[in-house]
Image (cartoon, rainbow, N blue to C red; front, side):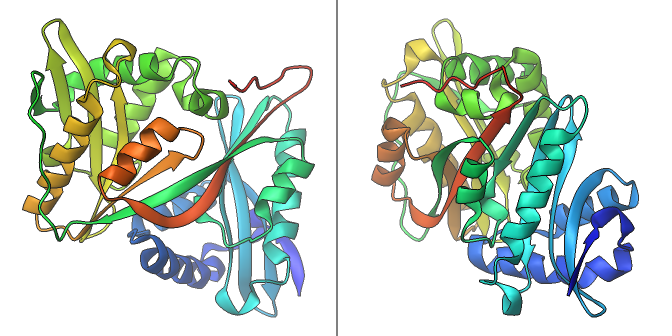
Length: 315
């Protein structure tokens, strides 16, 4: 068994592991991972991914990588074939990848969310490398039972392509000073939020965009909330983002948006709905529990910045 740089691995050698990974996340997360696997394959061919693999004979049995994005590195999959898990292989690859990302010239920040990780000891590796970390949960809800949409003075309408700037504005304002914004640079500026929204809606950044379950909530003075939804698989709808303007929070807008999306999923014949949440966001977590979401997988969000800069997490 030996390690190799990911850049040295021909795509044909990695494809069997990518297919196994796609099958794994389809079973565990109800996520059709084919588009992500295709993006990884494309990134490998373009030499846009930096990472390492473990090879057993002629077979690639584990891999980990990161990609560069505007001065930050984003760590992707930490994955090992089923018969090789529990041996510390993923953790060893992760150590290599984190050290390389932190050394990379011009890279001032490293982020990772370990949803797509088979490494049981991953979180400890991030702590050792100086990252700030917070637990997150991937939640799932059956759509077998009807969903009651609450009465509201807010008006709900489908989110249209021309709504992307206003959606980005609501998302940015809702995250100012938040824990998620401290750990994920996506929420740091209106421009980054705009790029995030366009990735979700126009480029299938988190499954295929679902226009029938994506909404804008409007009050007397204009938009106060947005929800972006997607299909993660043929049967599973996903809440990619739900955000409510600060002045409208705790007044029912979030419940209205979520219940409406769940109802739309059900009308489309989907069987389940999923979303992710930071565990410390107890207000949101309690809302999701009231709406029937339950834990499917524990993972974590991790972020590091080059000293002397520091990540300041809100209390």
